[in-house]
Length: 171
Image (cartoon, rainbow, N blue to C red; front, side, top):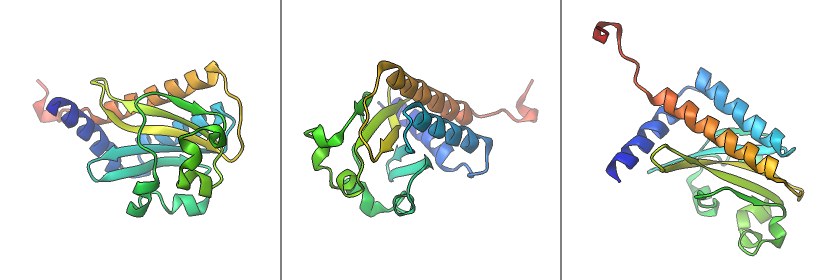
């Protein structure tokens, strides 16, 4: 438990402190765009979660009013919880749980796909979401693409969080 928390915090801290122009950010932005493309959807968000809240570390296609809300603490109550498994809902208006979500309904979101960012130890540190204002049927290939994208994100985060020894410490 404590080790899982330490690992997740280390990974999340590394990414949250990265400057937007770092190579890691480029990789995360690319993966976010590819996730949207895999579903032929206009929007995708990479969320990271820590003890202080939820952060949109990367996004593509988000309208300005939604992008401005990325770190607004008032949005936290309207954000969906980070899932523990991949969720794909072709039309939220036909889903008992999401059809009542004020954030999604108000913004006209109809399609919703969500996959957790799981560390090797099984700790959820965020998620990758794909959204659209129109419903769509999906297939297993698209869902697998989302899982692959999430694995790529976690791998990039874990690589980034490995400390690099300084020259004087190398023997």
